[in-house]
Length: 403
Image 1 (tube, rainbow, N blue to C red):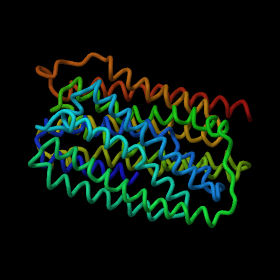
Image 2 (image 1 turned 90 degrees about the vertical axis):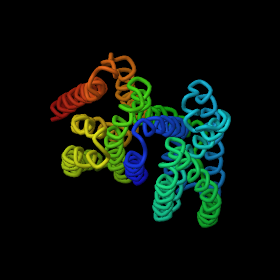
Image 3 (image 1 turned 30 degrees about the horizontal axis):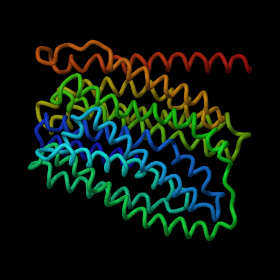
């Protein structure tokens, strides 16, 4: 959640100091890096949170075995992606050789793949404030580099402001993690780990679900840049990041339901009702505030961005409807319905991506930019509305049958 907010702040600063088209080009790299790194995590972060508390002396093997699987996988996927979609690596290269841009993409993907997992490990090992400090210093360093490099190097400066801190923080963080996990392992006794079959049974469906969310957060702005051009794509990216921040916060907020239900399974229904009520009390006002602040914030960035204000307002409506989906995902996770969880997540997010990929767009050269972005927004809102209605009706019928 902290990383999402800091990321949005960084993009706002980039929009302030860089030409609009260069912001759009740079966001292609950032979206691709986060798409690849997020997908390659295979939901091992949540897995580690489940398994680390009881792993005892096997903690080191669990944590570093996971990291050594994620990092090469992320780097290799980044290499393949850069070769298939060379424009992303070309953004990173700037005026330099293509190989330099490709190397930056590989390093960024490999580092980002384990960056968030580090936070899960620290929380599971009882060092949550270490994760907060790490994320905070990372955000400060990244924003500082952006302010220093963005104006002079444009899109490449934004790329470097991400890759350099990722590499440094992963290098230092891995050393720190070694000592944290070793100390945790020493204090934990013999410990046990679930079988490989049990791990696979948990990871397979939840990794699919995580992939759906990663697609939603990162593939949509990539498609926007590819289909609308970098100038309009920059506006859409800023608007879309507002939805990502709220969506991510809602997911983390409702994840507590799975933890509480595991501890008190006899209170599962009561906990679900309480979580849903608190979620609405927190996020409905937050969404209204986000819609109201769209124009004032974008006005600071310049006239070219103010066209995104109604887009942000419409997207907030979509996020409001998606809260129903987020809650249902949390409930299925709490019930241990991994297959249902994965199916709902992938179907919901996948439909949004397919619509963004295939929906006809007005020509960017002749149409108003807001009209060019509108089909993406309508697609997102319609999908979330359809799922919200379907899930609400299904839940009502289920409650009626059990009375």
